[in-house]
Amino acid sequence: MTDTVPETKRPPVEDWATDFDHTHPDYAANAPEIWDDLRERCPVAHTERFGGAWLPTKAEDVRAIAEDTDRFSSRGIIINDFRPELDIAPRGYAPPITSDPPFHQEARRLLLPPFSPKKIAEWEPMARACCRELLDEVEAELAAGGDVVDAATAYAQDIPVRVIAAMLGLPPEDGDKFRVFIHRILETPGQHEDLDPGETLVAYLSEKIRERRERGADGEDLISYLLSVEGPDGNRLSDEHVFGTIALLLIAGIDTTWSAIGASLWHLAQHPDDRRRWVEDPDVRLFAIEEFLRFYAPVTMARLAAEDTEVGGCPVKKEDWLLLSFPSYNRDPEAFEQADEFVIDRARNRHSAFGLGIHRCLGSNLARLELTVAIEEWMERFPDFELADPGTVRWSTGQVRGPRCLPVRVLGREVSA
Amino acid sequence: MKISYDRDACQGHNRCYQLAPELFDVDEEGYAVLLVTGEVPAELEEKAKLCADNCPEFAIEVEA
Image 1 (tube, rainbow over the protein chains, first blue to last red):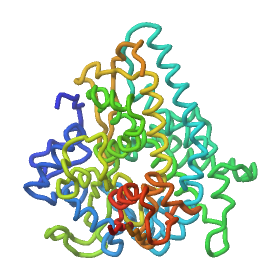
Image 2 (tube, each protein chain N blue to C red; image 1 turned 135 degrees about the vertical axis):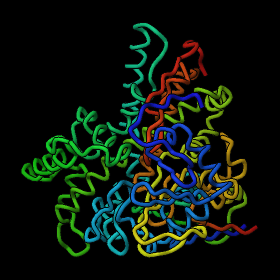
Image 3 (cartoon, rainbow over the protein chains, first blue to last red; image 1 turned 120 degrees about the vertical axis):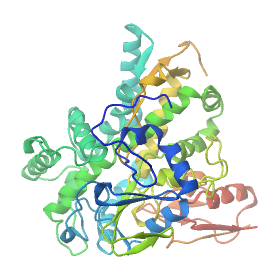
């Protein structure tokens, strides 16, 4: 790979099988190659970093962990040097993603209706308008001189921010703040001990929730909904529950979808045949979107072992971390034909980009909508483009993987479908 | 062709509803609802197979 690897404070990795570090920039740039190598020779990698963690790379092991909520707890889902306190279970910090059964199901059911496919479809006009507005800005920038634009920062990153802000009833201009919070939590966890407490996600959201309560939670947005909805016991949700869920909705929907849009554009920039097929064959798009999700699945989750157990023959100790690499699952040749090839019209595609089991991504319908609309609108406007300089592409570290710097050169602006 | 759907295995990925809205609807929580009982209409057999082949939770089975 020629992609840029930035400076890091993380110690170098000697061997990915015994010392892996998914927060190291080398992992960000080369993750698919690392999974393939581990899957063949390992296939469950280990590290002493983060107080002990495992990285299974085979689809069958990933599925087994995702489906076994007794042995593998969601109390911790972002690996870092500290384990969440035991007494936070079964709710966890951000229900329902950090919740275990039976609490999980109750917390999740409250959120399913607003994220169901038919409800999410109502957001399509807003998402499409947002893409077009961003593309107008890109076009204005190109008209002002030059033919290169950073598709990650000038386009992909803003789409999910604007949509989730609207869903939560938060000001769209706070988008930059959201991205800072998310970068700290997901991409560089445990590397920010010296923060001003006033500048954190906790402070920001606490203030917004307080404002909403004082104003009367009567809006149609999700914060109002959570403040007014009754749980299965007939009571309002606890403050911790409301806060944790709003934090989850804000964090989970932005980096992830930004990554999927960016990685899809990164792919299209380098594959003229796939660009042509997308433009000429609208029927292929449904399949292409799922193949983007398979091949560039952005999200890796984590679990904590609830007991001494084993995974793929490896001895896992209680409280060990486990990375749940859905991206590696999606590249396993035992689960997919031609697993290492991007096949734009792949008809059999049982991918796990949105997870498996009871924690299936709550926002999957929203993510799929945003990804589809974002690629449709980009390809409508700029059907021909290439990487401006592969050496300047930079991938995120941590459990959400996507290009964070993606300069592309827009070609032949007269080309039409 | 026969089709069966396991509601307990379904996690609401909605791949079937996307691929074949003629065969699957979704309820208000986003779980699939099979619209045909047993036999798949001949013109929908390919779509039924796609649903079975793409369900991440193996919740759909077809039998020729």
